Image 1 (tube, rainbow, N blue to C red):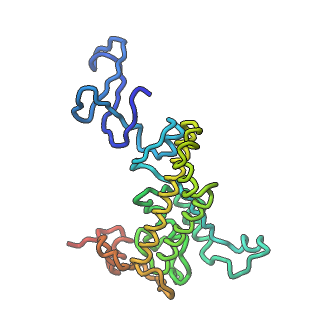
Image 2: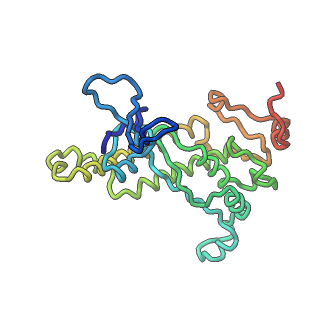
Image 3: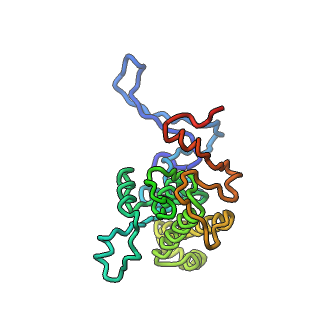
Length: 280
């Protein structure tokens, strides 16, 4: 509580022993290094670190309206169903079996991941690791055509159908996260607007309600951005193509602006051999 927090501050505090590098006097001092020039009586802030509002509220008892590090953890739980899983489920049939289930589980475990993973979603982005994870989980025999899963590059679009399934999985996961809140965003807004009722709550309760509403806003923006991305890439149609065993990836509409470029067979082979891909 010595200095207040700002996510945009570059100032920092350093505690050390008094003296030079050779002789220490035994005393200690705390030095505040400013990130810019400050006017007289102007408050100096430091950053408590890239923490979300949930972390700030839990650790320090406050949340920020403008926090570039604010995020909401979204649980992605897609467990490939093996024959053993289906046999234990009386309501399941052989059609529910994922032919690539055991290979997917081995691949994920080899990468140090699990079939249930929490990923942070931010106001303006979501982690690429989440999409890469879901591209793997949404692979089908029509994508692989007998090729092993490690042959594919999950940092690139595998196929239109695979990409549509991966992005739709994120939308479903975010909607499921929204459904876990005991109230809606509109209900929280009503409580906040009722100033008489809102004043009856203590400080932490008021901060918690504001934080809860902001989390819902963030998740709704994530859904809107994903649905826009699905439409922009033309993935909201039926009969989308699968990879058909090709490991070259696919460039979807709009990817060209982001520097997307379909890999050639030579580039694919060179990369697998560990050789430079750019021959220029």
